[in-house]
Amino acid sequence: DKLDDWKEYLKDNWDKTVKEILDDDANYPNVESITNDDDMTEFEITLASTSLSMSEYFIGFLPLFSAPAYQLVNGVAEDDVDYTLTVTDASSGEKKEQSYEDNKKDWESFSASFSTGVSSSAEVAN
Image: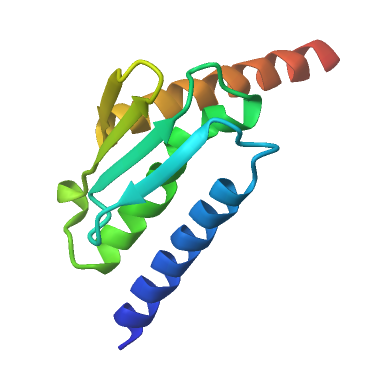
């Protein structure tokens, strides 16, 4: 029962986040749709344009923070956690596809770029 409660909680939070993004044209003017399957293994984001606002750059990382937890609670072994993220540019029809591992590597690289800057700033302060 607890696992079912967690699955529902995780899914509700995901759905709420997606709705907030889709309803917020000021911060996410290019986001046309965000969809996923019930197992949170397939995600699709459709953008009106690839000229993104600053807030829109992070949308592609949303599955990275939700899908693994949902899949683990759903009984998927940690080594088997995976998903496919497809981002479509509606203006050109161009699609970019990433796996969970690709998405995770991009996040780690992005995150490391900030960590390096913070370390350097701390060293300068000392």
